[in-house]
Each structure stands twice: as C-alpha cells, then as structure tokens.
Length: 154
Image 1 (cartoon, rainbow, N blue to C red):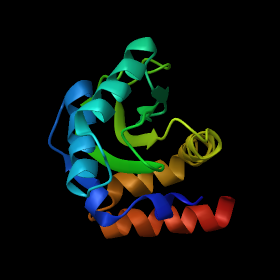
Image 2: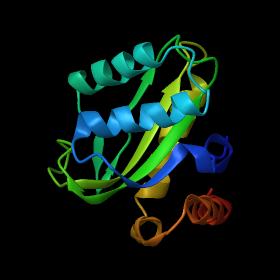
Image 3: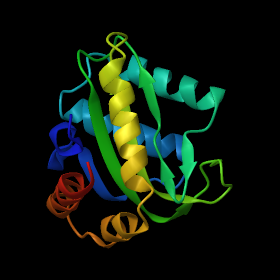
Image 4: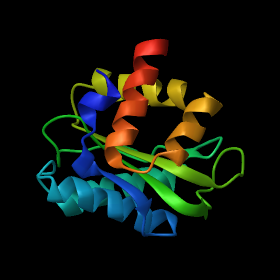
C-alpha cells in the first residue's frame, strides 16, 4: 500500500498548531475524526497514547510515527503533520521532531500496519525527502512529494 493511498489533503496539516507531543497526536486524531475515518475518536486517542507511554515513537532524524492498533478503525488510516518549530518527542536519537505521521490500524490483520510503518521509516531516512516535506507549502504538495519518492525508491 502506497502512502499517498492512505493520505489525503483532509488528513494533512501544515503547519500543526500544537507544540507538544500529546496535543499533536490529538490534533492528528481530530483530522482523522473529521474525515470520518474513525469509529471511536476517544478509543483511537487512548490507543495511540497508550502505545506512546510504552515507548516513544520518535524514530529519530526529526521524524515521529505515533501508531496503534485498535478496534476504533475498520482499516488502516493515516494522518500527517509538520510542526512550526522543533518538538521534543523523546526520540531515540534525543533530537526534536518536525515531521509526524500518525498511523492507526485495526486489530487484525497485522501485515498492512507493519508494511506502512516500514515504508514510512524507509522513506524518512532520506534527508532529501525530509527537506522537501518541510519546504512544502500545501497538503497537495506533500502528496506530490511523497508520490514521487515512492515511485523512485519503493
């Protein structure tokens, strides 16, 4: 599954208004809820925050991928945001983040959820892509940049 199949302009926010990890997660959850991609907003929020309590999803290099599996969705859903300033996400490299992908999958099957996490992680290790995303001015541009990168490298 391609990321641009999971994302749409309505679930991309640049810049994010929030400046703290939990409120960023909530802002992205709200985008999914407004787009009618969640069956239960509160259950989705709690699942993501619970996963975050276990271990931070700040993967390093300025990227975080908060994610969870929950019955609050029927299928894999995603949202994306870019912060105005660096945010402490308790990342593995102890550096702040600006790029946040939120990924929520159903309890079963596990495969698509893991494939999407892997795809995001692989793409985000490319510094050129991270720079292009931060420079993007609109959600449409984000989708275009992601689509071009997926075609080239995956």
